[in-house]
Image (cartoon, rainbow, N blue to C red; front, side):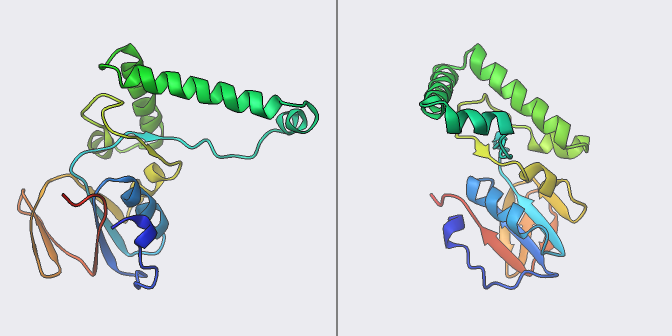
Length: 184
């Protein structure tokens, strides 16, 4: 299921919810429902790279330049586009130094936001940056660090009714199961 098709009428308050997948949709749903649920279990096969959105209010000096300097916004957007395109080209062209650098920066950013070393290890991608599309979020690590949220990285062996059984033998009874990402 894509997050755009998420049924907001499903009652989630004070329920045990399992989210299967680590796609962008799973990230969006986890951050949206985390404050509502009693317990949230996130089942992921592999950790994605999470990039910050840097969504914040613009400083007054920058708003001044956008308003009073003709073409400044277009110039800034063109430069931003150029830098991001160059980074994307460098990161996807054979696992070079740029891919390693961006991966290191994003893992360092994650370490600043995730204090639990076990969770940090599970949230660390095991592949080079640029292999898969990164997920953009400022709130995912905060949501995953909450006491009532748990990350399960053991593979799912089977689903029995309302229970998920993982490869390591753990059983989790769920009130709601949300399966997000691609179905092959």
